Amino acid sequence: QIPEAAVVMTDTATGKVLVYASHVEKGNLRDLCAEATAPAASIFKIITGAALVEQAGLGADAKQCYWGGEHKLQMENLIDDPRRDKYCATLTDAMGRSLNTVFARLASKNLDRDKINNVATRYGYGSDIPFDVKIAQSTLKFPDDELGFARTSAGFWNSTLSPFEAANLMTTIANGGEMIRLSI
Image 1: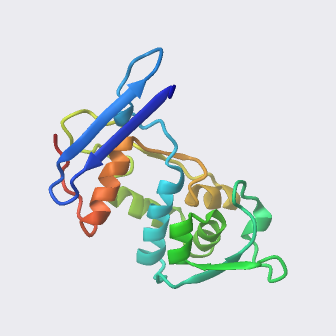
Image 2: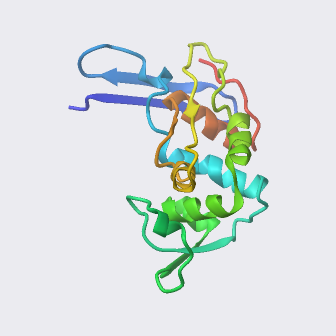
Image 3: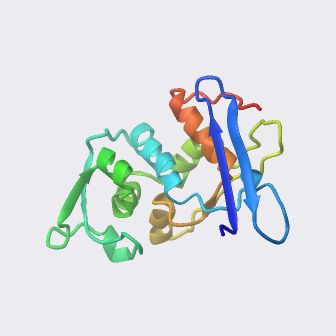
């Protein structure tokens, strides 16, 4: 009783698509694997993490203390406050545990829209990804305000991608940052 589902799996060494499956229970049958309508959510943290390393020079052991922001990120969550910041995490910990507030704070302090867009573009955001089936382009839009920028950087909203592009992104990372053409 799953209304919609999609999965794309690849052989990361060869780029061969092993699984490409889309399921729509009712209504307009369509290829969910190729649609870029799903929120990128925590997958976008990979882009932000790469930007923090490449554009801001942070290392895997860069530490950020934080509080709150697990489900909802507010402006007060972006402000360093030793009285409230009960937890601390490295960039590695934040990636492994998908810590929204750590990504939001680090991005707010160290990045801007151009820096993240630069990395996102190199990983295929907003581009046609060559494949045997037409894949919709992912979207990324940063609001003008600081909180909106931080929320987007943490993957809360304002970015979409297709399941295919998520698999393409992971295959690119598995290949040391080299994007290879995926094929059936």
